[in-house]
Image (cartoon, rainbow, N blue to C red; front, side, top):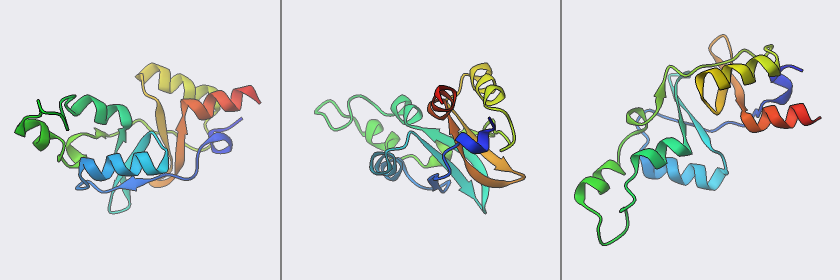
Length: 132
């Protein structure tokens, strides 16, 4: 089975300057775990919900919140994204894509045909395909 047959074709993209509150809202509303960062129609990076958890202070919204906690929570996407993400072609095998994800310790692969974004392939997509 090929990646194109198992990938999620509905992706959500954001711009380099979208701020963390916008990113959190999109992830929450869309129910996704990954956002693609795009500029001029080209993939620049990936942001996962775990990336946001890593940069946000646990004191945000509490009495212990400091100004720096608030400032960090307002950072733009380009400051928290993974740059030059590992990608996969649509004709790659599911096995090769999963192996690539394990090798790089990542949970998703943007699916690109040349520079065109076709979708995103996640561990969940891979497991679902293998269970068929």
